[in-house]
Image 1 (cartoon, rainbow over the protein chains, first blue to last red):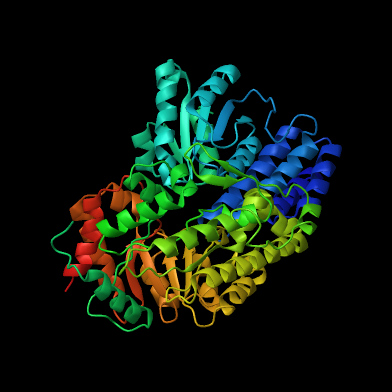
Image 2 (image 1 turned 120 degrees about the horizontal axis):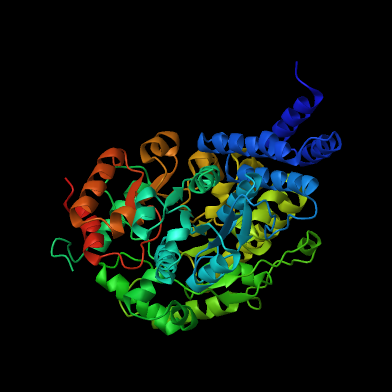
Length: 219
Length: 350
């Protein structure tokens, strides 16, 4: 027989999938008040919901605005269950792995990157968001400063793919490449482009990117 | 220059294009070269910033590309994506690649109430663009017929730029009235800007051209409720004009709605299945595309470009309504022989 806690977690998951922010936050508070461990809320409800949303997006049942909204609802829930430590820049410290992420130099698009960040946070990872139009040197500096295991590069414009390659080359030259995995994503980024620019993995979309990031960390 | 392309090809191509848009099958399919600032500026070795800053340099760059590619490329006062957002109050800055951009400035929903429909003679980059049109009109080479269209960035893209795309997407769910209000003012901005261009350049055979890639981010229901009526209004202001539309994101889910909005010629993205698009809306909308600009036209070979073009032509030409082009703008560094290969495929297609 399912417990009340299980039932709340399932309802919470459904609310996130159905993009119902207020109900999701109420259920998250309820789960927390009932003594449900934060980790369990994260894995059973938030992460599982975003997996489901990602699946719906891949199957074109959901579209980009819904993917963004699902990330927003998940973020609202994270604020309920982790109120003091999660901010826009993603500074939660879970110790599960740290990702430095940004949109490469010359590209100002942040929509895809921001969706991925919400998915990464929901997977329990620490994220340092460098924003958009980030020069290679800044990526390197932040990877070093934060002791990050993953560098995530986003790009929408085909004209900025060389910047992606240059960023990875900069990491290579610094001698840090062997200790930092690189994942790339964005509309023009295919498996072959990822290989060409020297990345370790390529995220087809936000859910796939988060999944592969976790895999790169060897979890 | 290709010896396989006749000197009068632009005129022949234009006639084929008119026939194709009328959903009649021309003897051969027409071709359109979709080029913008990065390619134009790099072709004449100037920075993108110089291209935007100096009307003379912009004009010369566009004419140089036009001359190289058989008079097939357009000439217009190119403001990139900055014109309408700047006119609404956005601050222009140059990104590291040299493109003009506008920072989001609608931080709170109350800021939307403070927005005003711009005055094209006064606000943002609109006066600069009108001056560029004026310069171009006065300096068009004798004997060169240049037909300017009325170009606008569509309401969803403007709203996303000035609010921040992610925030605007969330507004559609959490604050739909505010999102609607924002889209309304963006659409009204488009209308005054298109009208100002009409007043400057006069009647055009080309038509009104709406570029709104971000519309693909919406669900079909959102598009229908929030955007479709606005497109109808913009196109409805110019009943004698052709109604062009550019959106090179994946628009598969809103194709029917774009037809309903009155789109007549659609510059369609490379990841839309053209056969499926033709079967859905090909009887009402002419499809312009959709050779992948990066994976085929830029990094392909002459042979692979010709093969991709031939396959597309075979799938799409019947009963007209098709113009061969790239599914997006031509990338900087695309080999000229690959662009020639696309044109030659049409010139030689039997």
